[in-house]
Length: 220
Image (cartoon, rainbow, N blue to C red):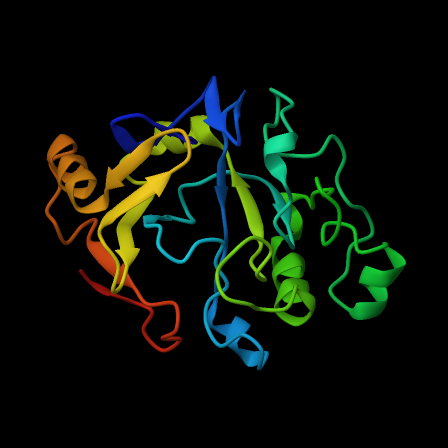
């Protein structure tokens, strides 16, 4: 429900339907990196869903509003000034076990959790790499992080804020989203490149294989 109905690359701004209620717009996303595989329990990229496609965002064109080392249950955080973010940020953050314990695992516990500031992205990713929740098959709290992207800024940066569309390898290209129903990722991709008059290679359609750490994305 965090995208506009009929144009899933466009972020919803107001009255966005999520978990049974209307909330202010935000893009709940995650950051993945090859370094996550260094922990042996992560046999694949941690994901909340095993069958849902989506968008790869351009990091140079998005505005991060806040960060979490876990699923932050951010649909419960609906301050219209910073939807998806807690009213205060974790302070005195660090990536070591001792620093996280001293800070009572701020940003890595709670529902909703307390957020880290965008300036602390590198430190949060280092902490998540080492001490994020244990991996398990895709589902809630399966070891992924959560990063809140500003919806208004995302829309203003289109089409440049989108790097690619993806679907899950071995699954249908039709994905389900709470609030928007079924979305055909292949069709949405065609509509996107047509609307912005882009060549297909500029914003490709990719197949995502979360178990392939070497090349998780390939042309779909």
